[in-house]
Amino acid sequence: MTAPQMMSNRNHASVPHRRVRGLGVGVRLLLAQALVLVAGAATSWVVAGLVGPALFREHLRRAGVPAMSDEQFHAEQAYRSATVISLTVATAAAALCALAVTWYLSRRLQRSLATVSAAAADVSAGHYDARVSPPHLGDDFETLAAAFNQMAARLESVESTRRRLLADLAHEIRTPVSVLNAFMEALEDGVSSLDKDTIMMLRGQTHRLTRFSRDVTALSDAEAASASIEPTWVEPDTLVSTVVAAAAEHYRAHAITLTTDVPADLPPVWMDPERLGQVLSNLLDNAQRHTPPGGHVEISVRRRDDELMIAVTDNGEGIAAEHLPHLFERFYRTDSARDRDHGGSGIGLAIAKALTDAHGGHLNASSEGPESGTTFVVALPIRTRNQNEEQTSPLPMNRGSRK
Image 1 (cartoon, rainbow, N blue to C red):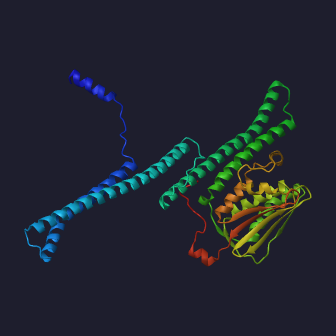
Image 2: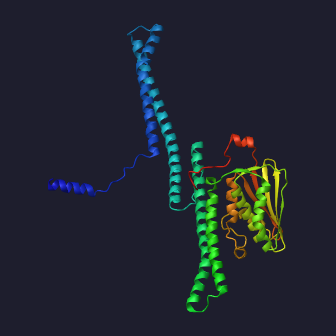
Image 3: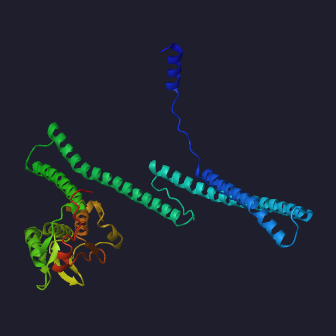
């Protein structure tokens, strides 16, 4: 390879690749409209030039005008002039009108697309509050704008949840870690001794971290419960009695009365007894933590239309109305300081709701206010055995993915 060739190759390699910009939608529309106008004008001129004179000459012959006469010559000249003028004026008017309309529409399209593009760039930069206004260009563009706004709103919600989740995780972990660190420093400096009280305190903090880790894992599993639900026919009284038996000793230790009200004629329900047991256990644990000694908690079961209603009612602290819509959010507490003293991680109700939703049911809470008690109601769909044979898996069973 010669030196000039090597120099040429180096220069060529050093030139950065530039992306060639294509024609915009406005220019494309104008070119397409111009092409249609040219095709229409050419067709009109061809038809007027080939077909028109022959037809005009035939009509002159029928009218008695002699062929090759001066009358025929002047009449044909007048026809050609009128045709040229008419086609020219009509083509020019049509071209101006079509190009004006196309320019107007292309400008609106470009403006709408530029708005969507700018909003998409804002979203990609982390500004999830970006929205686009309806372009009023038809259902297709309205659907596009609505879909974009829905996507942006969803991303904003996910980002807000992520930030709150990380902040809550950091806050939950910080407190026991700080306490453990402080006591370890005190032990190292000889300020404190490793007596029974210190050991109990250290165990309490490590237990708190362990419980928190377990609850976070349980929440993750609950939100992916569609991949692990194993339903079977369960008698409501059997489910309730099992859960109550497991919680009875804990309730006796806190001097709280736990009763049940389960009619004997209730139909069996297609559910996962372990998962629904976890739901009721979380609700009982929540009721115990917010019911003072001497209080009362009841589990009642009723059938309402095609749903089985399992209610957990306590006469404890109650909940203010402004907190009710947020009870099932992760790490939400009506009173952060008090709830930490009660030992709650703030995600038990979120776990219960996720598992209830996985069964195709819904979980609601009601309270008349502070010091008036609270009622949580788990509503589950009732299916007959014949319905279950027609659709053997009424619950989502996508075992191939986990959310």
